Image (spheres, rainbow, N blue to C red):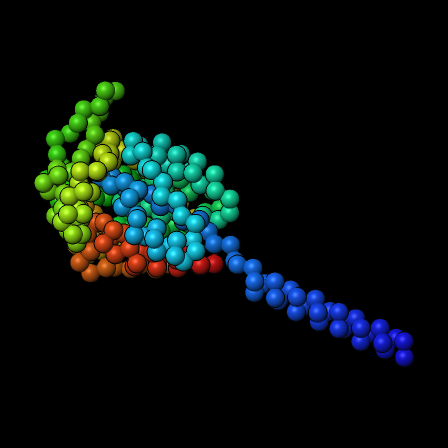
Length: 264
């Protein structure tokens, strides 16, 4: 009788422990990865404002890193240092030239969960952003650039001519906002666009791509080529979207980032 009582008591205790564990699991929020957003040339961190708003509402911690735009190697080291400062998993997101940066920055970083390319370059070993931009017809960036600005240590900085910025870079953004973007654009060192990339992180991490059909900086055919080559787990093509698809379609970009963040 006593043995039977002990067996029943042990069963009750085990049941209570299981119920308590289930309750704790229900009340403990899952740890969401931090989303690190890396802007590209002729933009700045504010280009991600709409995406940041969407992701923050969904409960994701977000860092919009300031990309120096000096060289692929040094910019990648800077972004890698940002990743190292963040506890827990990270999703790296790059726009345009920022895609080349995250392609290098993620290497050797096991905390990186996945890569998201937003109208972005995903170079292979030895390729440069400039080469990839001209791989397929349709890009018109060269004719839209302003006169290069000489740098004190040599080389030049590149800007988009402010009078051509709206149609070239952000045609699906309201003109007043595009003019503000043009005035505040950050230049890129020309050397960064011709710098050969090293080993690509997209061969080691899951990748996701989103881009628009009306991109004049990187033709849609080129973006599709890079997505297919990288084995993109999900590719979203936004009809009529310009190069700044994250500014004009922040919800679509944020939704893809959430897919990348939730995937296993």
